[in-house]
Image (tube, rainbow, N blue to C red; front, top):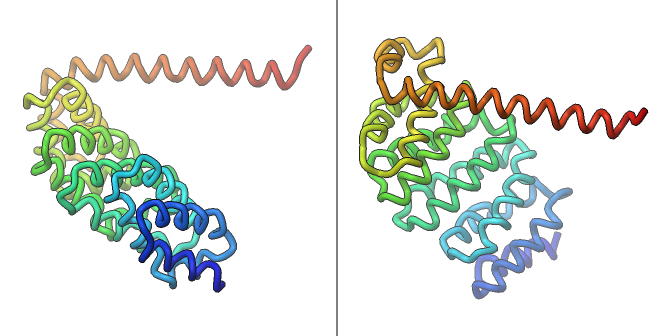
Length: 238
């Protein structure tokens, strides 16, 4: 326990390289001590590393946060601290926080905390008010997150639909427009999207992208089936 607290102290007071080394070491040792990591105040220190814009910082934070959220009490604290980074003025830190959030969203245990933490509302606000690079990053994240029903409902409740429509008809580039279209198509297929669904089905840009997305999903399905067959053949040679 003393060694863990010493590492937390280095994360708090050390120089940049020392903080990263201590953070990585603490992450490696954290498995059996998840409640202590929470109690020691290490989680905010990990989030602050994203502001250093060091190439290794995001990877360390992402790996450690994915471990920490397996302990329920850590999940809300992790997301609250990511919200703090998403609200800062540093575009690079925001981008890193979005990447970490996407990694965390792969774990079903974190999904219920996304609404209560304020993450979804902050993402929608960034779509409204962020700079070009932030909007581009967040739009891509929203497109990915919109496949999860609970998150999709939260995005719609936070007012994402009109914001995404503005991006679809904006001038921020093809990638941003495609991400907005992908999210809107997922919204339109949601039974709870009663207010906007009829209008979304009449948007010409969405009709064209819907066909593209349909064929892409089919091709991905074929790739998965093909990979599965190869694995089965390898596992069960004749």
